[in-house]
Amino acid sequence: MVSIFPAYLAPLRESLIGKAVDRGLIELGVHDLRQWTHDVHRTVDDSPYGGGPGMLMRPEPWGQALDTLAPASGAQPRLVVPTPAGRPFTQALAHELAREPWLMFACGRYEGIDSRVVDDAADRMVVDEVSLGDYVLAGGEVAVLVIVEAVGRLLPGVLGNVASHEQDSFSDGLLEGPAYTRPEVWRDRPVPDVLLSGHHAAIARWRRDESLRRTLARRPELLSTVALDKADAKVLAE
Ligand SMILES: Nc1cc(-c2ccc3cc[nH]c3c2)n[nH]1
Image (tube, rainbow, N blue to C red; front, side):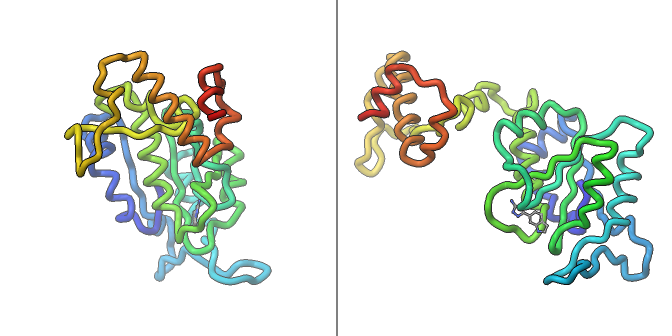
């Protein structure tokens, strides 16, 4: 990961990803872009050609950083560049990235990075410009924290219980429904009886129905991507 705020990526040393790093399941490298500047002020930004508000990140430091971290002579990483103008980051893309042996992340700041950096990198590596959603952050670091967590948890051995991500929201294309743990009654709110019944088929049906109802209510557009059987259609027609 390359950033002018390397400390922003320190949270990756905590918790799930941090433990995976300690166990050697993931290798993380954080690099300060200013290492590849050579002027006394360690300048990384400049005014945009054609005018416009704010500053852009100069191409030279990025080019040298990528040349140093991923020399053209060897194996190439897949470069992930968070940007509001990117393709949506989805669980499907997280799975795709989790299959890559080496990912590199470019954290932009200011109004973004000179466009030639991505063009130049794309001559020798796969580059994904990725958006986390239709809102604007002040830089790419937070997006990288999200992407690394979403991808890292999919890697073998990182999650304690492999079944966890197989039952993620979106794993079957639907939103996860409500979930409960002890106590059976909390502030006069009981756990649904079916979950206490021990009838696994009934529990699976109830969970599917609750997922369908929640997806219909909150993200109806997802339903067109899911194979629905007759029982599903009945619930949605309620
Ligand atoms: N989905 C999304 C990405 C971003 C983003 C990503 C990188 C930079 C660099 C400067 N501003 C940025 C904003 N905002 N929202």
